[in-house]
Amino acid sequence: MTKKWFLIIVVLLTVVNLAAIGTFVCRHYCHKRGPSPMDRQFHRLKKELRLTDEQVARMRNSREKFDPEIEEISNDLREKRHGLVGELKKKKPDSALVEQILRGMDSSQSVLQRKVVSHLLEDKAIFTPGQQEKFFSIILERFPDGNKPDIKR
Image (cartoon, rainbow, N blue to C red; front, top):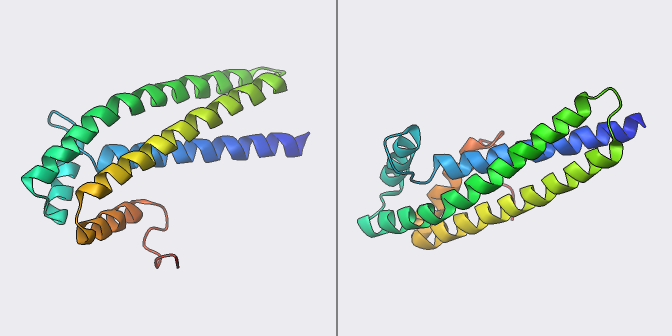
């Protein structure tokens, strides 16, 4: 039984970490209206990649579609995490319910990851090959151990 709970906790922590990474990448490297730290990040990205006005406009358009989708999924995941913690706090958590919540979180996380990847591919299509290389190196810098040598492809 201890092994099962350990596995559940490992899966939960993995899902939470992946959600955090996905959200971080989305929110820190794309434009969001209004003055905010994300605007500063977008301007930094714009400067480092030397984006043209057309590229900036295309990225903003892509981001305007992307933000509401991600917000909805993020809210759903947050509610599921709260439900999971609520169940785990009980004196005798219902393992079937915990498993059901985890499956729901897995599903939502999978949708989130696919949308993030799709959005990154949309942005990639906006960039020149040199900008693409720089864009992904910036993203890798933000991941834990991002300064390790590139993985062989």
